[in-house]
Image (spheres, rainbow, N blue to C red):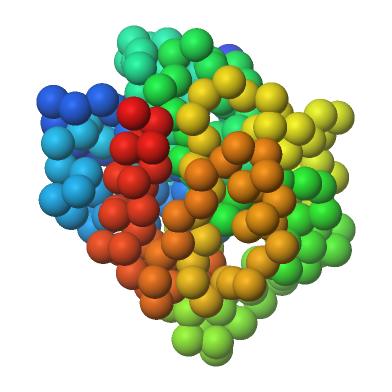
Amino acid sequence: MKGFLLTDHKAKIRYHDLLGDGPPILFLHGLGCSSSFDYPQVAAFRELQQHRRILVDLLGSGYSDSPENFSYSMAAHASCLEQLIEHMGLDNFYLYGHSMGGAIAISLAGKCEQRLSGLVLSEANLDSGGGLFSRRIAGHEEGGYLESGHQTMIRNARASACEEWAVGLEASSPVAVYRESKSLVDGEARSWRQILYSLNIPRTFIFGQKSLPDPEESRLKANGINIEIVDNAGHSMAWDNPAGLATAIQRGIHFAG
């Protein structure tokens, strides 16, 4: 695992950099997760093996540092990743983001569009208001969430047989999870949807089959966005069907040409 020091925050982002001769793919994970946990199996499938695959743990998640003075907003994460991209000298690469990571990927794409060959999203947050879990988390005051809410979320994840998310939450900073949830609920002045529609690069949006029907499917198609579907999977498609997700990502890359 490699690390990059963000001097402004005195904190390191850590990531796996898996070798491949093909164009790089930068992976961004969802709320309470980490790329180091979610994506090694996805990245190992034949469909993606020819690519250089960069699996990033966002600040506050996985093996990356968790500075308490960081805002953990989607825009702040995107700014840190922009520095990482500059540090790595990435050009002509693909950006993949899931759920919260999709909102960050969209924000990042708006900053580095000229470097991107394409954007692939899976069930990304596109508007303010958050999702089921981010709304539940953001409904607390920060102090209350840190005191007991985070442990309650972990217990509830285990009780609902979602061991993977419970493990991810345990490895995440409660401060990060809370502030990320608030950022997803509050949104930004320019929505992630508006940025997505304005991008002049190939864009793919992936749904898990079990998440359908969803009115977003036709709405996104109408705005020129390619749609892919992962069979036998819901929102947590990297866990439900990693081979299917790898295939969908590759199709998104093929769509980008």
